[in-house]
Length: 171
Image 1 (cartoon, rainbow, N blue to C red):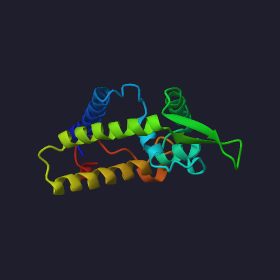
Image 2: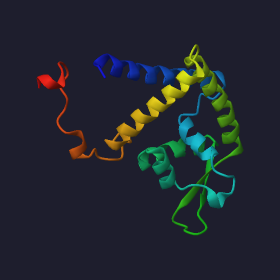
Image 3: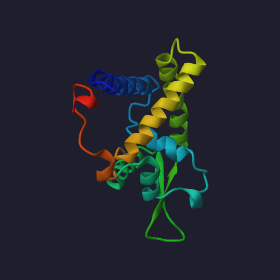
Image 4: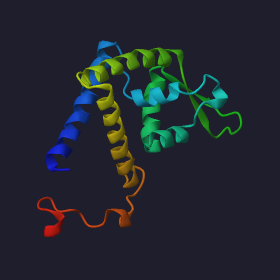
């Protein structure tokens, strides 16, 4: 991959993020700072005993626990989530999405779908599937070298940095 491709990927991620934020604003959801976290919580049943803990959320989202804690505090203050003491272990809290949170996620998902539909305008179903597979492979590759922000990259996996110009045979 050349420098231009990497820059284009960065621009794509930034543009997608900005388009999603604008779509949320159009849906009246300006205050949701952590839609990914809220979406993850929406995947759990309404049963408080099955709700995840903060650590479980951090692991599933591949985020640092303090990041999840800060996001949950804001979402709780806004009424999108609530914490309940775990009946089996009172030292832990279980996190549940509220009705307001479920309504917001439904509106938010519609906004995200509109952004994705626009982003993939003119792509065939096969191209969309191929793109999804390629992006998933890149994501998994980055996770192996610390791309999930929680793991140290394995020193033996990376080796010395590749040169920025020329071919590998030249070096």
